[in-house]
Image (cartoon, rainbow, N blue to C red; front, side, top):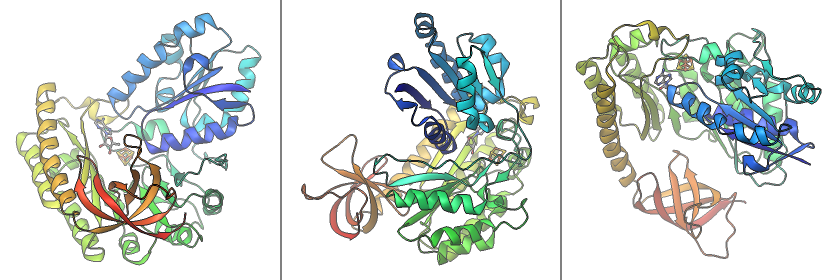
Length: 445
Ligand code: 5AD
Ligand code: SF4
């Protein structure tokens, strides 16, 4: 059997796409740990921020000597950078054999056959408006996975002015509900107990397709699957977060009380320039409504600092929004110009050192809030879905609360808790996690 070395950068959507590629290669290739032993190298790339793109070029550059030594080695670049760069990529890195855009990853087997016939390099980056990802079921090979991702829609129609995604992933398309349900049933049959439904903007699920359920309806259909215990989803666009979906947090037991709701900025002026379609007040109102319906809900967010034209006052509006909402965690980024995105034309760019200083202030503020929230768990009993032994401390088990906090906990050695739903008493906090002690098993494994 031949060997494939696959590395994934970027978002969960890419993790999911990588899983599909491995499933497509099954029977011909087995995954390996290092590029040196591989017959096929695949790098699944992300171009959402500049930094991610640099990483790809430096990593792929390093395979040049491997290819020189073993010309039969196939080097493939997939995902968003592949789409964005296309032919340019093979010009810059002539040892790359294959360039596959996100809509084209399903053509991998056929592309490998073409390469076998000596046709190289191959650049497959066509995008179709009516693209439908085929159903490729995963065989987990008895891996005992506890949680998995399932893409329910691809692409984005929002065109936020900083974002490359609509250009590299194309327009929004939803997958048929029956494919989604079949895929989840297949995962659950193999032992998966938690799924995260993925899309760039899950709230728009089914809006363009006649006869499809809405996202809130789809959630309720997924919740009917027996032996599936937990459901999460990401990402939600604040402007499209419907009352029906907010209600699902109160009404669908399996839906975990956590929502990632990227706000990007706390300044209405900047939100307008970002083309986000909501104001600071609209966002805060949604948060109030959510918390009224589901009081314990944990919120997380993405923040961009130093968007073109962001003044000290705009930035302080973001800080004050963080104080007001008290997110459990945020992911914050310095603005970077992206190809095709409109904001790259804005002339009032914020200097690099100002962006760096703002990022630090955001980090410091959020670290304090996260710590306060973490400390509020001490003494509480939480439900944890156990993923297995902790990677860094194998004597502890690790898993997540319904609110998506990582919990590392001690338990009697003889217990095999992987895949079980357990109660844990929280005793202490780490920087990014909670520490506790096993109390009892609720279900499973
Ligand atoms: N610069 C900085 N951050 C960006 N993001 C998207 N595009 C950019 C950009 N050009 C961030 C947003 C988004 C997350 C996935 O990446 O915060 O929510
Ligand atoms: Fe990009 Fe905005 Fe679409 Fe998210 S919603 S993928 S930030 S364009």
